[in-house]
Image (tube, rainbow, N blue to C red; front, side, top):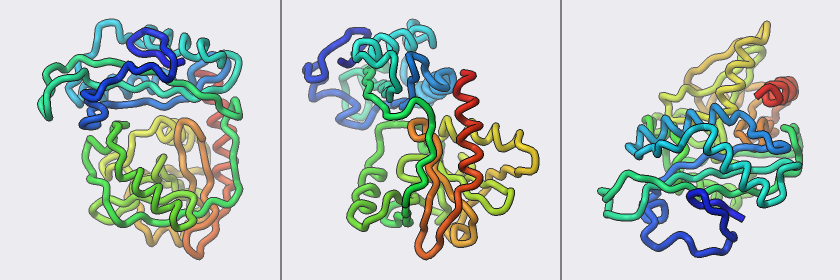
Length: 281
């Protein structure tokens, strides 16, 4: 079951037409988040990011789009799919309503909620082999739109195909200044000693929720230093550790980049702190 504008529908119902602006122009946003036993993890952060993104894209925010209303609709969908006692992945998509060409006829929006089961109720560190490479065919343009979680993900799609064709588990995306920005599906953190670095939003990375939470944790951890600054491809060869972060996986250590292999000590420490923070939300 999915939920479309407050109505529960079967997955295969034809409720979206060919004029859908998300399909035609990528005129849409989405949030992907975890639910554990009917509790939405970091929901307030996801909600605030979504509202800010809608304003940036000049979408009309409906009066009923309160945090409580959308949470209720998400939980209804989770329950309809019998996932209220399990771990679930939730995707909330917002798209501008039909009409117009590039210039929309309306800024009113619709919403779609989808859910699927997850194997683990908490973030679990997977330290199996995970090799990555640079994707250099196309670049991220470092501006505010790059910080948003929009449906314009063709670069990520082509990069994922490149990774699959060449036997990599993921790829690193770079901006037009040749700076490391993020992974295909999450933010990047680079560890050297007790310094943990992540690219700043100004370089074009997604304004990730788990990125935000880890920045908070690292800043509070005695003896660790957090830097939001440029990451060059050259630095990857000298790093002790690299890991990927997103709201579904949490933290995913990288094991190999070219001839360099990495440890996962900081990642192991952080995943426990992240789970503790998630339980408090």
